[in-house]
Length: 119
Image (cartoon, rainbow, N blue to C red; front, top):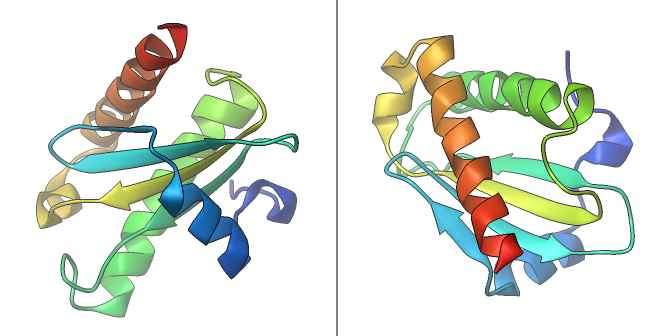
């Protein structure tokens, strides 16, 4: 299942706000930047050409990550509301990860973010 349009960051000004945010967590494959807002939680996945040269590889990774995030945020309410999240893919090993491994990486990212928000 895909994220609803209202749950995605699409405007360039919104991207720049999140990019300027100082709050960031990461692991060896993913990095997440977080910006607090008054709106609903919105998410965007960024897969640079530097990491995956072919568009179909970038799109496949985006679809896989979005599906897992949909399950994590929308269905299970894992993350706090009112945040814009930008998730960056850091390396091309993600292509070979199974869904369970990718889910574990994303859950690790959310756990690190929760720990930082508590402090």
